[in-house]
Image 1 (cartoon, rainbow, N blue to C red):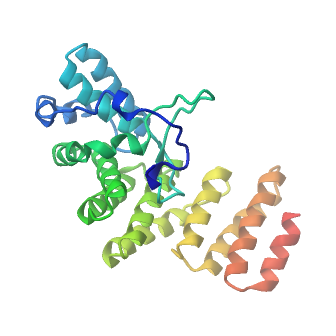
Image 2: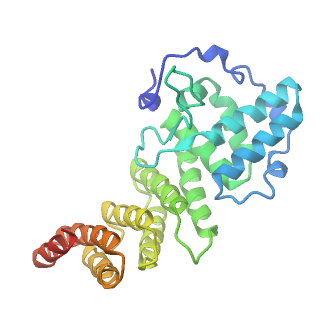
Length: 277
């Protein structure tokens, strides 16, 4: 079993998958970018839905339908940004062992994936294709760089006035790729700078899950001075404590503790710990 699919794999017969005999010529009969022309590059769910609708519209045209179905299955995998060895997992996993697509399902069609990587221009899909190609073959350094650059470009295209889980997912993918490929400095610095800038946008209205995710990403990868992160979060926690958000304030004080502890500001870390409790 591949190291890419240990997280959620169940025994299955890959020969039963409809895309095991894909022909690259059928890829060129489709205009994937036209299918995705109105889909935001950061909306993974909308990408999958657009491909699913296109697959249905093709009916039983076998070859092209299988190609569209394969791309739809790729788009439909769930991102798992905290696991660089298995960054995509089945979106559906039933108790009886049935599941939706996982990475190992595509191990036998890497030639097709490479062709698709060169054909598809929509960054939302092409970045994922490049990422998958690299995970399945770690020697594909160029694909890794395409994926990381694509993810950063996706985040840059997202609405500037709001923080989202998608930003955290894409930047997590990007920084893991940079780390595993030897940290090409310009790209790594650009990703870390974006992480730091996004964390700087945090305020008391930021959802706790996003605040926690961005703080973890920033601290884990040293994207900003942990002392400055602590100061930022302390200001947010203080404001929350004076209002009706005591539970959220307690969680933010916990994030303050992490930041001050990492920066070795023991007194501030102790204060944050007390306020958290």
